[in-house]
Image 1 (cartoon, rainbow, N blue to C red):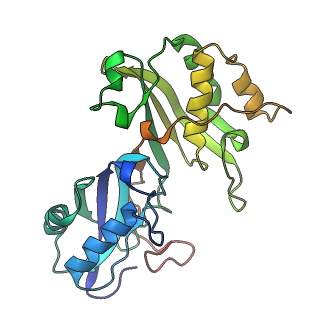
Image 2 (cartoon, rainbow, N blue to C red):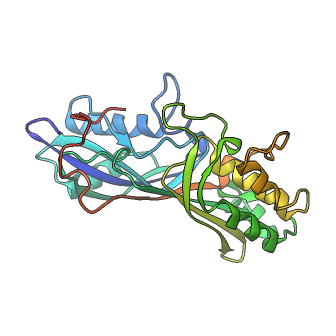
Image 3 (tube, one colour):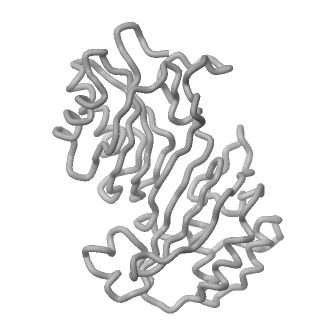
Length: 269
């Protein structure tokens, strides 16, 4: 719960991840969380922490990151959004700000997260107006085989093979609700994936392996083997971070209205 004299504000954020060393504050590194806390602390005239729904890696973008901060009650959500956008650098933007319930936690209350990965196939995808935000592959690709591979990952599976690092306390199982390929504005393809949780670099390993399927360098059936932990079978290298966007975070309607089962009185990681 927020401190007396403050209220909790929920923010929806867009950012261009190219110049950031990921989301999380790190010593001597420029991070998204660091820029947001710098601005919030200036506006509130005190150290002010902000917590996000998840930690995006170096180079990864967002169009739907959700974060929350406790600020003095004199700051309305509307006024805070305007003031933050006036002070934030050009590569971070507060798309929306609303008052949140007192126990709302952007990470622990989330029930699903969605990512989009863009692959450039047309030559124009290599333009400086597109290449920084996609993987400019610029090669013919078999969409049908990639769709077959995508269908195999839907459901509850172990994604240990698709993770750079596991989470010992939470295991390696994830439930994929959606995994599909769609056109990207005449420039290429977008991979849309939604799950209850993701492991470190999981989406990038999935995309990198699916692209090799689409290029004919490995069969789609490898996905079934990787999910089953087939010995000797490894993923392809991960797709570059530039094509990845955190696009949405989902919460139940009553998120944050009642105290959590475990004590989370303040917004801390």
